[in-house]
Image (cartoon, rainbow, N blue to C red; front, top):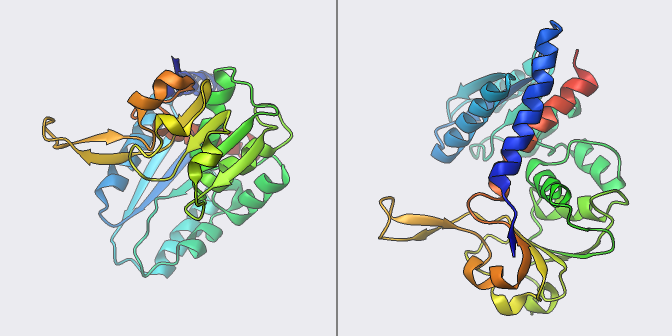
Length: 292
């Protein structure tokens, strides 16, 4: 069993991007810019946005956070998005989700220019992904593929089983892995709560991607020997022995499943850090395609 180290891989990606941005600075060119728009006082969102800002600072990317009150009118948020659509210093726009209930998330996502949609949620980006055009893939699925490629895990003709059908992970990773491209070209099955016997499908997986949102759901008897396991889950479970009173676990029972795996991502330290790294990579890509 070999650990797929998301922390180390994310660090390598940031170092590669820093090297490219340093070259831009030396030549006197503008650098890539990312703006994050945060509405309300969601503690988890605030921590996430702070982390993204820190990542930008580390690699020399321009970064800005726009904080708005929870009661901000939808029209005002749309106007702010439009302002950054036109701002040449910012090549990526991130609107942190979830938004307050009075704001239509779809309307906000669709207002972001597809050229600055570094989260990969715009219908144009999603459509391009489905038909196999080069586009901005949403960051968690892009990070999963990046890990498979960098660890030289064969995907061509392999059976990839995805647990979960969310628009953020399940659907996009399925579409990424079935494309006729390097690092993909897989046979893909998507499983979800309507399946009467999930284990019937998971035991067939050469590569199992778990994004079902249930702590330690995948057990040893649900996988075959030699499986590659990518655990996307981030779940809090009570642990009174720790100062915080809880610990973070994935959707896979790591202690049970790891001995049967050829490769496996830990939680934490796996996919989560890759999501942030791919946001930076998408922003740099937006700069190269549409920036100065």
